[in-house]
Length: 493
Image (tube, rainbow, N blue to C red):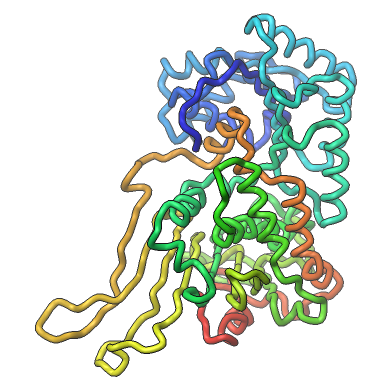
């Protein structure tokens, strides 16, 4: 997160302000930033909705949600100060006059600020509305200043490479690239951001961060939950597009990128694009060798019966949608030649756990190889959620008179260092307010990430998997995912 800076007056416009994302994440994030004195001195939030409403009713609705979802306690004093910045504005996404009225509202705030304020537009809406909204915004000239006006767009950013290119071209007709903030909330997580500091701020790790010392890297994002109320969306998406194309590939970039010359957003994003370009593309005939898909069946999670994916409401009885995906990647560059990167994600798995495992190579010869102790591999484990810590596993002498070794851990715990640390959306929204694009995806990043997925996506769509469902709810996924790593003598950690 950037250091506290003086922010210029800003008007924030939330499209879809009555939706789930706004109530659970956006308003709590803005409220917490406000309490932490991170919001501009002069700001207003214009909440757009289709229904008739007024400021008082909408503010009461926001307060109820803050009491459920804010990480900070809602006090009457703080709420009174914050709620005065929220206005409700009835708006129709496809009506020209609505945008003219919105533009007038923005100009009215500018008069109050006595300056042309920054404008931050958050599109918390379905992807199919992006085209219409951007067109109307262009015609109404409500985001015409590249230096002051910013638009935040939620994933999914396209559904394949062709659609991502089409969407990028569409947005480029209305906005400059520097105005577009493609958000991936994983990049706002404290431990993910710490990867850069950990790698490039310490002389003891960076010399070891290459194929000569690292045997393999694993990235796991496991979820206990199923699709819940998102079946309609998930049936059209699946684990590959929902998680790997964006979240996991972005983490892979953070772990494997070259050292940037500076912390400028363009420099860091250039290095991430270099990683995506270096990922070896998987040919159609090799998809089954490098990628595994799965779909959960019945099982138990924490002792409670869990139904199969095909039994979820809104899911087809013969659905071919994967709820689990595991892939082995190689990066064809000097640093990572022949080092496998294993990524996996799944729903209804044994536990909720997101983490990165860096496994170091064994010593070619160890003084203790012939001793009574069994040597364990040195590992660096970066836990992203629910725990937030970094663990270094190594061998140490057991206390006592004999020279025997045992595995031990050194742990850096983010929670212990800072309780109640900011949530991802707080970090990302502050960066957008500051105009810092570092944690947001650029158009070429998005397109390269889709290109990495292209043949896997096309192969899985064209071929029905007769083994579905092939893993029990409450397990760690299909057996084939174990075979994926065991072929090279590895195991999922």
